[in-house]
Length: 273
Image 1 (cartoon, rainbow, N blue to C red):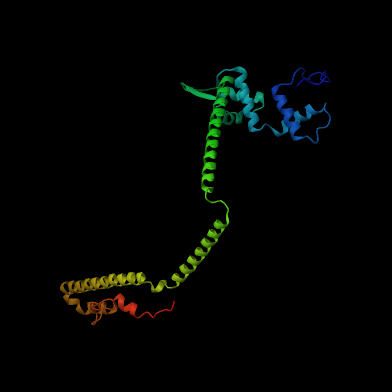
Image 2: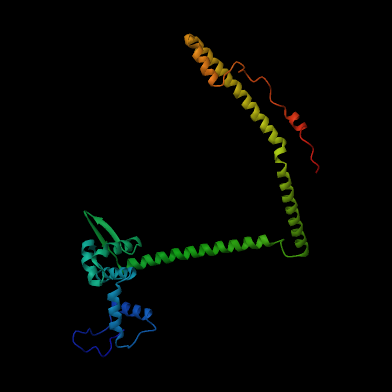
C-alpha cells in the first residue's frame, strides 16, 4: 500500500508502507469498521491504538520470525532480546515467544559448546508447512475412508430392516414380551426371601458359624486348663474372671446340629400363584 500524498511534512515517512504498518492498519480497520473516520487520519489512529494495546502473541511471533527471515542468520538469545524491542517485542517476552516458535518447529535451535543458537530460514518454514499440509491431507483421506466404511456398515445393517407392516407387528410383539418379562422379574423379586438358593446359603453360613463357635469354645477350655496348671494358687481369682466374662458352669460345646434345609422349606406356607 502506498502513502497518501499529504505526507510531505517534515519527519513524516515517505514511500511504501512497511509490512508491520500494513498489519497495524489492517488490524485497526477490521476492529473499527463502523468508526473509521477520515481516511487521512486513519494511519495515525491505527498507530496510536497499536501503541496503547500492545502486540498480540501472534503478532510477536510474526515479528520475531521476520528477524530471522530478513537476516537469514544465527542468533543467541541475548542477541534476540536486543533485536526484539526494535520490532516492538519487549525483551522480557522474547524468550517465551521464541520458545513457542521452537515448539511449533518454525524456529530451530541447537547447542554448540556452551551456547544455544537459534535460526529459521524461509525455505525451512515452507518445508514445515508442506509437511503439515501433507499430514492433514493424510488425516483427511483416512477420515474419508473411515466414513465410507461406516456408511457401508450402516447400509448393511439396514438390510432386512425396511419399514413394513410385518416389521411393525414384530416390534410391537417384542415390546409386549419385554414388558411381560419385566413384570415377571419384579414378581420373582418379591419371593427373593424364600429362594431355595438363599436358604442353602443361610444353612452353609450356619454350619460355618456352628463350627467356629465350637472351635473357640475348645480354645477357651484349653486356656482355662493352662491357667489352672500354671496358676493353681489363683483359682478363686480366675473363677471370678471367668464369671465376669460369661463363662459359667453351664458353658459347653454346641451339640445341636443346624436345621436341615428341607425342614425349613416344609414350614414355608404355600403361596398361590
